[in-house]
Length: 71
Image 1 (cartoon, rainbow, N blue to C red):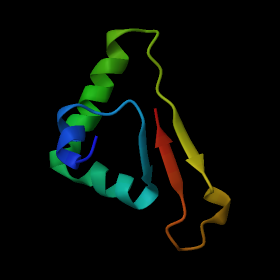
Image 2 (tube, rainbow, N blue to C red; image 1 turned 60 degrees about the horizontal axis):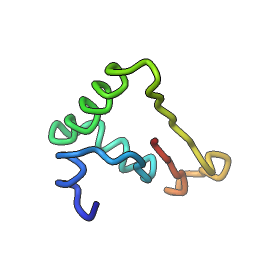
Image 3 (cartoon, rainbow, N blue to C red; image 1 turned 180 degrees about the vertical axis):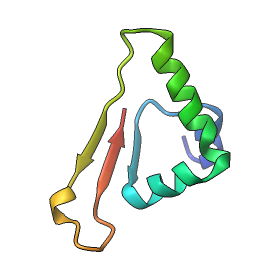
Image 4 (cartoon, rainbow, N blue to C red; image 1 turned 90 degrees about the horizontal axis):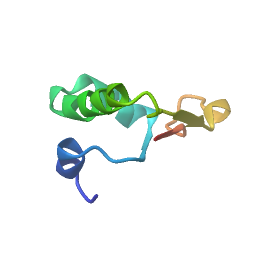
């Protein structure tokens, strides 16, 4: 996917972002469809799984170095 609008229409299977952008996404109403569709997908089948992977948290000292991978 090349744009935010693509992700709002059809949430990606893998979302690579940082903590700052994830925070912004969680506060913006326009991004709700990403989280709503993911929630619906999780509820649709007990075999579906959600993973939140936080990388480089140990390196956070007030600069944006945290990486989040959401599957």
